[in-house]
Length: 501
Image (cartoon, rainbow, N blue to C red; front, top):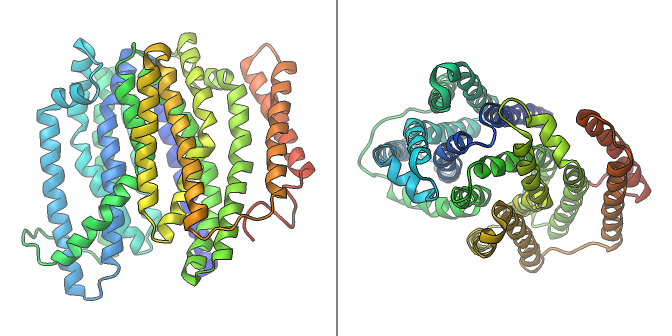
């Protein structure tokens, strides 16, 4: 694939992924409209937590490990045998897991979300049982997408995910008058069926892969290599999903509505983070792969620090704006239908805490890629485990009785900041990174301090009678002032953007 074609593919796939994320965010807004921050909203979110977690974590680990091993097998017969073995045992494992989760749905929900009682436990369990079959479809969809990507079929995999998110929303809206809250269970099932059908159609068109049932493990060496790769990917690549899982476990102990409020706030933070992160990684990752292969440590250092500077310039100012305008943002986006002013206050409070860690979450994903590229995968695994299951849970345990949901939000934010500091510190020692002159970092600090001061002044002095007007005027003035400050602090120049050259 030539360079022009590569960037064209990256651009199209990026746009499709952004649209997919927007549809996922619209789904949360629809839940907010229909249920607000009620126990029913909590039930919908908790019921889909386990299927979504397994989809992203287990599916991602299997796919990454499979592609890594499959692409290095030269013999076509060995490739097909390995492929058949993975298909067979993944189908058996996911089928048994799904059956057990459906049979013991109430016990599973009660085990993980032990704060649920009575009718809320029953509703969540029934929803979870209805959604559980989507686990098989979602995990296989991730694997099929990986197979298509290996064959340079990038559009098909992205379009399948877009279809999944789009039909989930559409089906839930259509069936809601008939099924009530259970419309989301049917939405999860039907949308995952549509996604896997789309992928199978594209796989059949590609014509390179056949799926056959094969119980005998004829390629043990490759299977063991795949398992060896999958475990660190599962642990290291799932940090953000573990955060959400732990968040919902503890939130289920609080009064009704806080599961939903935390979910709305965290999903809102993910949206700009994902879009901005996509812009940075589109430029940086191809450069990183090249420099790593050449063992050009000066080049890698430049990409690392220029990338961090880019993330700071793109994400931190947005975080500052969201912090000061949290209540208006939540009102304009969510406060309709069953989403009351009390729901807005709950969600805005969580949003203010989450945006403090928005840069750290994006930067952790960015920095982790350098460790993987240089085959030092243990570091992000260890730091992720310590951050999620050490720092995060300790903060929540110590302060949840006094501060409630705020303790959960602070636990996630502080632990993400801790992991970022740890990764950068270890990276400086282990990845042969050399920090450039301090001048640019001092200018960045000055820029962020100035943006904070300007946005706080805009928030105080430009106040109108309508929330949407406050938000629109504030955002316009924020854009003008932040861009002007970029020029003032010499962080933006047509010959020297804050991206690697």
